[in-house]
Length: 324
Image 1 (cartoon, helix red, strand yellow):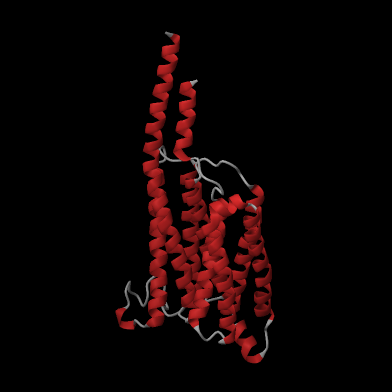
Image 2 (cartoon, one colour):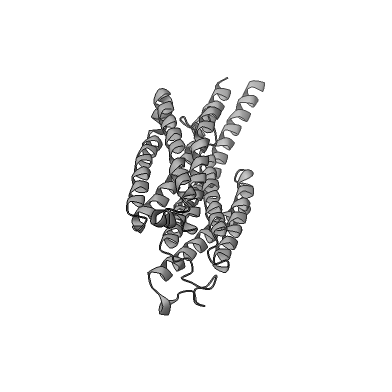
């Protein structure tokens, strides 16, 4: 009789686990999909911001948050006005999307992990700060430090969003590879620094002054020299993944993307200098590659480097308990 009671309790617990896991997965799936859309929107936001800067369209709309006093300035529309207007529109949509995710996390707080509403509140705070910096770029007439801070917050939003997505995927992690994450952190940090140097380079006109008059070349030379430690750190990651075959097998798509981005980034940088920064397509592509670099490195840092356990592992554990 006691045996039957214990068996019944375990079966009830097993059924409850299945229902609980399936119930929660419904909500988590929604957050995962919204998170994927957020990543794409943030990358687009960063690239459009770079295009706006390259095309000297940062002050194409003289007021903020509207453009020439209206939401859609048909009477003043040209390429530069469109870029600045679309950049603001994308930023507004990203803010609405993050606000929507935060609201859902509050409504469904009992059905999702406890850390999710807190992290979304951080994202919402970053969006508010990002909007403030966007206003300051117009008010301060594209001040270099304000533009650099604007990009910094955008990258923090991207990194935080990707980390949330990966943590939602990694409900159960088989093995924590601290040394692997530490190895990936260096090129991520270097790429962020390199991006900030690039913004300073373009927002202070140092590159044009250096290439045209051979003056104020410190920032440009620093930007070029910084490419070497980044390339070395990426090659070290690739070599480590090849040496640790299991890492390569589970992450080969990301490793392959890093290889492609490394060589294409170098090529775009050389082409930008060869054309004296007069071809916007090369500079915009350079910014896009940097955003993808940061996205992939962040994903590799926070994702489970091996096969994920998922629901099957939890169910198998319960089956072992029932069998025993």
